[in-house]
Length: 275
Length: 285
Image (tube, rainbow over all chains, first blue to last red; front, side):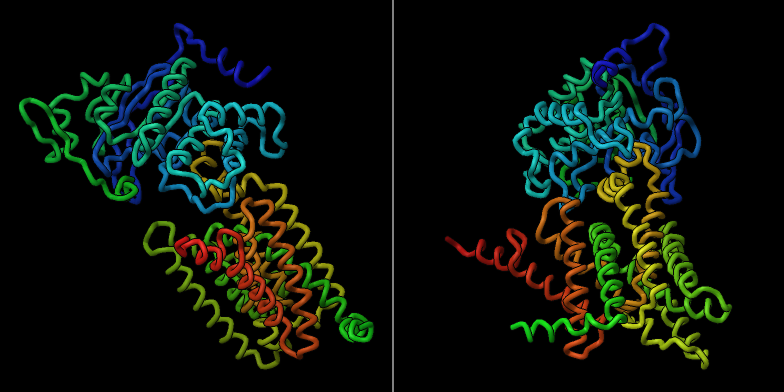
């Protein structure tokens, strides 16, 4: 029985099954400062959720809380109705490109294989199904020919695909992506969005932080608007209202003929302030 | 020709030199393998600080009449944990914390050792090593502890790889990042203590960094980097020790300078990452 099949049968939604991901009154502080509060929302099965907010709004902190890297001050996060820690291996995380050490001596295949370590157990050598899963992930992202290349020699878009392939190889139920559309070419952007659509058919829930409000409203089912606390959560047309945007972005929003324009060009390099 | 060779290998007829060679070889390989993580995780300065912390550890153990090796090990770990404690809350940066503790440990060690007038062990032996004074029991201790460290590195290869390359992935895979960070520090402390007698605490940092940096310039994957680094470290130890005998210079220094020679060669001539490769590429065609 392959892992992929078991994944598919696992996630047939039961009528009474709780929401895949629930936040209840979550508050997180980081380096002694309150980074996030009043977070309460439920993400249903297989939703594509865009996380939107100004720099320093706490998007990265939210993701780090979800993988258990940052402790909650109060509140609960539940995945499949269970507290964090029960399901950490079903969460995959695609880091911001600036967070990765591209000079590290690993090849593309090495990185994608890391995604299989959870399935394999840590002392076993990779088996046939692991190599197959890695090969399948590389194929799906169109980088099968790059397998033996060191990651430092790739273009920005290729590097992003490597980490997408790794997330895929993890066979996650929840996929977290931090700013995947920042600084990549249009081909990679489309490949990323297509992957999200494909994952949705497999009931994988995706949470994606982005600066691109157009993309968030056109290509995602749900939007979470953040600025150190939850401002709105729901379908894009309900979230992207003038009052909500003003509350999130403050003076960065201009209203021109009834159209809200958010001026967030030139965000600081690597979202330094976004904790 | 055969005369030159027999002249070259004369030192091998002495038992104390055979022991020294074996010890230097083991330490060279061990430092260079664990050194790959030191280089990739930018821990060189921490390694240096831990090495110098050994000095007061040895002195305290001597005053208390305890085992010198255990004293050295404890002191190296105290400094490693102290750096984590000082910098954890973000009060000061890690390199600042290391700088403070490094100088403090070295001063404390020198102060204590200089006050122990009857102390039989020369300060310079701890600082720069005394590879030809290695006893049989030292050799056994080195072999057992070195084997333990290498086995741990091999068994926990994946954990160390993931926590070094991507701590966030480590968290999602339920690897205990804190535990393995501390384990790496303990292995590093063991390595430093074992190296005390061959290259000395003053030069162990070089053996932790130089062969690994050389291998980094030459290969593209961590397993091959570790093997090549171990090889460079082992060869440097042997060549350095022979050179020190024939040129009559301090053995630790000769070993480190040999390793540095390999590094310079790699820095100049390595394919793709080497200096000359870079210059010839930049030249307009």
